[in-house]
Image (cartoon, rainbow, N blue to C red; front, side, top):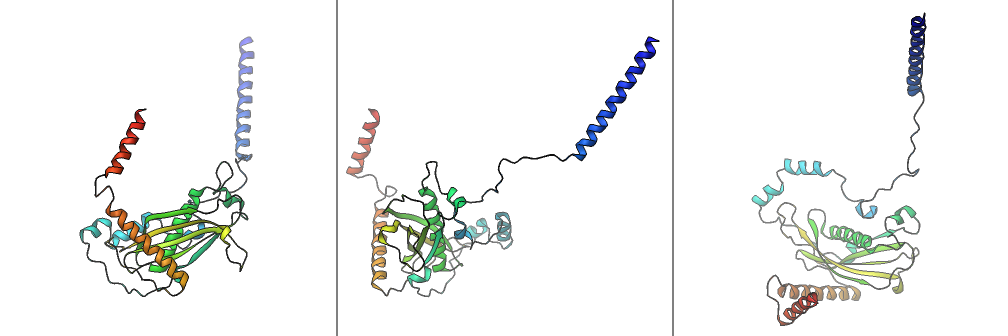
Length: 282
């Protein structure tokens, strides 16, 4: 009798467990799972450069561009092995305004864009502005040379901060080619200023940064320097900018001749090196 009682209880318990398991499994498939996100806003996408400066780029995955280049027999290895002289190009003289380009950063109107330009203390990161200026110089260079060459940044010659930015406002980045003799290099002058009202000129006190960069044009297949369009100078302001670029070009050549890669340190430089070494021993 006791054995029959224990057997009956065991069967009842197994039946209850089976029913509970079946009910739980059915609920697991019928009740939707609530997924809670960490944020209810879509994440902003940025590659470090303002989107309007990269909108003109051909959106092609890198691997597809590489395969297309290899299919045409223009891979880097083949190009270096069969490199010939760059092809001749028609170099029609251009004016400075032909390459002029400007873009407005709506930092005061777009808080999500502003997030990508602020540091932890709430100030504009100059490094991000410099990245935009580098991208802007590429846009200006291609407007001057055309898209049948490859332009690279040779140097950032000078950056002058005229007035530090003390408030959040829309910024206007603008520039143009100000020096080009027809050789492979060209100087691009740019500025960052507070965006003025429509139709109003930029005031001197609103100009924040002046910057000059040197760009070099290369043949896409041979990777050798190619000549670019020379500039036509007409107005007094253009003559002033061209003379400034000519002076900067002479300074770069002089510095290249006395660079440490070509000459050993002179007496003054040797004394400075010795002074730095003595300071480290203290």
